[in-house]
Amino acid sequence: MKYDVLLCTYNGEKYIVEQLKSIIEQTVKPHKVFIGDDQSSDRTVEFAKAFLESTDVKFEIEVNQSRLGYANNFMNQAKKITSEIAFFCDQDDIWLRNKAEIILHAFADKPKTELLFTNAQLVNDGLEHLKHTLWQVLGVNEESTKLTYQDTFLKRNIVTGATMAVRRERLLTCLNTPNASPHDYWLASVCAMKSTISFLPDCLILYRQHSNNVLGANKRGIKEKLKSLLNRDTLKTRRKNNITRLNILKQAIEDNLVDKDSFCKELKYLEHINTLSVSKKLKLTELFKFSKCYRQFDSGYKYLLMDIALCFYDI
Image (cartoon, rainbow, N blue to C red; front, side):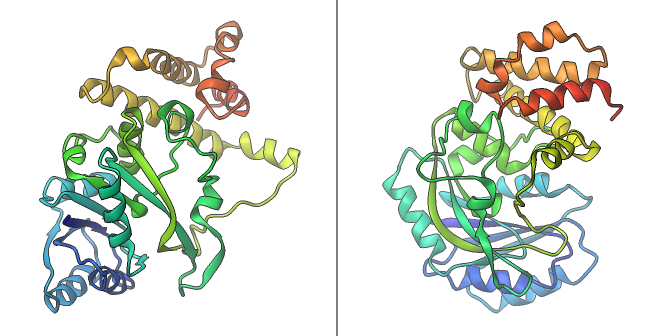
């Protein structure tokens, strides 16, 4: 079973060679590495090209004519793959030497799986291990986390693109990424809707956390949690996520990837909360009529509170 690597870059000269080295040194080497550079202003492309030319692995580097953003950059490269499996890759992480081998074996053992993702070890800039793994921070549990659309992906994304691999046959049906939607959330949602997603608990990459984007989960009291829920930035994120979730489901239906009748309740719910949060005309009777849906289709009643707040805030 062959695989290609999809690697997107932007001003990553500091880490790109280290990442590429970890890919080339895999126990099972890639068939080809595709790099999409989103108009870096540093020497990322130069460093990547020089390193890959010193190896026996095929590669292709494309510098985008205009900035695409990370999601569209990945999907622009995805249409080029020829191998059966596509591995998504960030520019600044490190692959463990047997990552590809383990994932390829999993695909071989699970022929119905179209998307597979793994855990990751969080590290700092110097690759020192941090306290938590990626799944611990995201609240993913091998025993209790359900990989169905209704139980998980309708509510939130738990798939990190840098840990993800996808079968080419499925990937090529999903090149039309919904507007402003992360590529990993889009692909994971489609595969969850079709029950073709799986995970492995192994930490197969060192997932670098920079000083300005460290993942973490601090324990907070009720007042702090409430204040956090209702601050402007959190509400902006909630509105953005509401739009993203709706766009993903609508796109999947529009592209005939899933049957609309199978997800009509979920679609109605997402359309309803998006209408409320931008209408500025709060109708409590309408909102509370859908309140039970927050338990079924969302992550709890705290999001009901946030959507009420969105009706009042000018965001």
